[in-house]
Amino acid sequence: MFVYGTVFGGLAVQAGLHAVEVLAMSVLVFAGAAQFVAVPMIAGDASPLSVILTTYVVNMRHYLMAATLAPSIGAFSRWRLALIAHVVNDESFAVSVSRSRPPDAGIFLGSAAAIAAAFVGGVAVGTLIGGLVAEPERYGLDFAFPAVFLALVATQLRRRGDWLVAVGSALVALAIAVRLPGNWHIVIAGLTVSAAGALAGDPEDAR
Image 1 (spheres, rainbow, N blue to C red):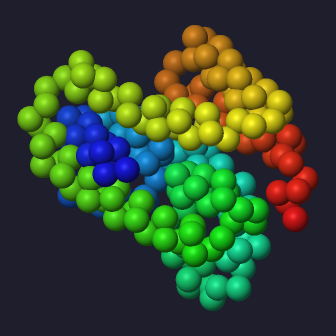
Image 2 (image 1 turned 30 degrees about the vertical axis):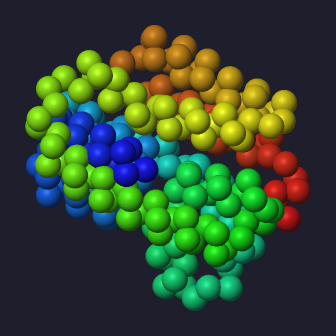
């Protein structure tokens, strides 16, 4: 995750954001996927509403993660739940869910704290050295974001329904990307896969 954050920090600086803006986004938002999506939109002068809508849809999966985590963390006080909600991330969720259902709160929180520290630390380093790497896409650094999520998805595809949702959402995104400009393929595919994932969810996970 440190390397992931470093790549993001470098790419964000390359896109024209100031180091303090990148760091503030990483601390206050702490949503790697949404940040990777937002940076090129901001650099391309996309409207604030478009950025907000797109990143909201990208992060809609957090509702599903929160529902799975709820039985484990429901006893925490409200302010602690707010802090936990802020650091929910795909990697920690995947680790905790793969070990037990419902997830162990201690494992999730420990992983989330480590992920948050590594990501923000990596972003700080990335903003410092980002200007030293010209054309980061030449070295495949811009593939860090999809690579991380492909790895996470690959470990979670265990049932036929999982594969149907994953492949279906990919096909929907590709079809829309060909026909519509901008990032509408992210918005529409995100809504589609969220609905499909909820419908195809394992009833045992809701208990």
